[in-house]
Image (cartoon, rainbow, N blue to C red; front, side, top):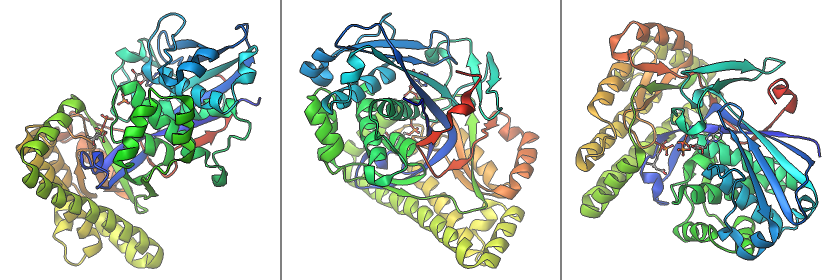
Length: 467
Ligand SMILES: Nc1ncnc2c1ncn2[C@@H]1O[C@H](COP(=O)(O)OP(=O)(O)O)[C@@H](O)[C@H]1O
Ligand SMILES: C[C@@](O)(CCOP(=O)(O)OP(=O)(O)O)CC(=O)O
């Protein structure tokens, strides 16, 4: 087998936090250039007959190696309820469930037979620097200089995360890497073979199994499909995914291959010349607590909360529509588009929202203002710190800088990040201005660009010197 490398993207949920948990609403998720890589290799093994051995190495972290020996007879009889054990008793729930779910799928499809007769799959994981805090780490680059990673002197669970969705990227790239080692026809470019959908479906089941619950799945969808308008799968399917976690292998295959997931993942990207600027804010808050506060509010005030959500959803959709219109204009009227981009570098978000002579831009600015207005209502109503005062002050300060259209708290909100829409041309001037502005002293701009594709195949030779 020729070794292969796959990568999946990190994410920022620009619009649709919380609402996306309900299949009624759509969300806009941007795939980011922080990628998680999974390189595969197959070697001879001394494992006994009927045992399939899979090792995953994550060399950027101390103790980053996990080996699982799968007893195929037990996996066949118990399905996903089979408890696969790591050789040294080490835990990595995301790696473990991606291996179990993918192996169960392969076993049912007859793709594991060869591996029970003395072959071992080896996967090496790498993650781009922006996923984790940089403290106490050493940089190393590949021989050709095209890849550069941070090597930490701590275990993966001890390194601070930046909130880009490392587990979704890991599960998605690892699933692709394992499938590619197991199925000779694995191909994510030839759409007719549906492999990307299969990776997505398996990764959703694995992620859900590892977390012990099901989120909206927007992170796995974006890690696979890229920057998208996402609408989660139907409530019935949510139950099927939950069942699959402890079901037979045949049901897993049926769920992955035959059922209609009835979800939306429509490609949607930023208009050219407008960039998403992510700021990592020193601090942090836990998403699960915020989610449960919002759920309590939905129960306590069903009618009022629906009204707020209808308004918030309307604002989210106006933002998506305004960005789409700009995209279209960039193709149909290049002169007007260039003029708008020039104006954006000269004006701040507050002025733009009030500029009747720049309706294309002011629609974006006004939609962002409205999104924030309703997120603020949710913050006050639920007591969850979705857009807390500190973030309001920061976002207002950002909106008064030339070149910035506006910004929001991404995903579930909280204190940990801000997401701005800015003119690409104005970025150097924005960096300069914010570096001397005390309002931004605790903001670290992340070096990220938007990605249209999520899961892609990488060139294996780009990792020479690192594997
Ligand atoms: N590079 C990696 N190597 C090994 N495991 C990883 C890596 N990145 C993430 N993980 C797994 O994912 C977990 C983090 O997942 P989670 O807490 O959901 O954070 P996130 O919000 O970044 O997805 C880690 O504890 C580890 O189990
Ligand atoms: C509340 C949510 O709708 C969005 C959370 O988005 P974040 O990007 O904040 O999430 P984490 O990566 O889990 O920290 C929950 C969901 O959609 O699952």
